[in-house]
Image (cartoon, rainbow, N blue to C red; front, side, top):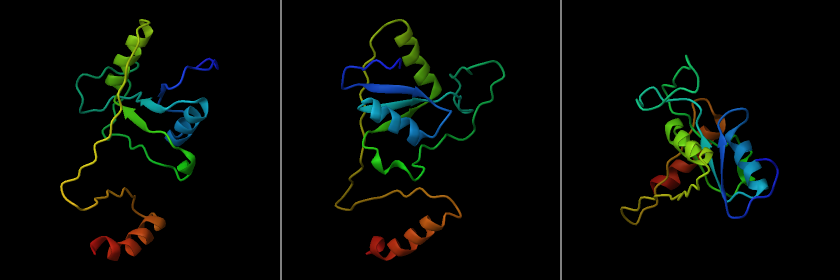
Length: 141
């Protein structure tokens, strides 16, 4: 963005890289965005229809994980990470001076009267181990 205010509500699209996902989303929120699309800059190795950004660019064998770096408590807007080939299509449409309309939705499974959670942790994270140990008895009840 060139610093000029945009008409709200708007969804801001930013490129992956240079700083954390949390920093990108926080900056977009401060700029007035209602949501953020983060455009991946690397192809996934298992996706055949992706074109590298430059000759010789290596693909990623594992999808990047958007996660809170521990400083995201002040963020109140949703964000999505787009595969490079999907982001490239949106960028090409914008470059041709056409309007892009995006709908963001979340699907929350509700097969019965239980609440289901997915916890994403990493090995060796003491906070996660402590939380899971303390939460186990409540979760199983």
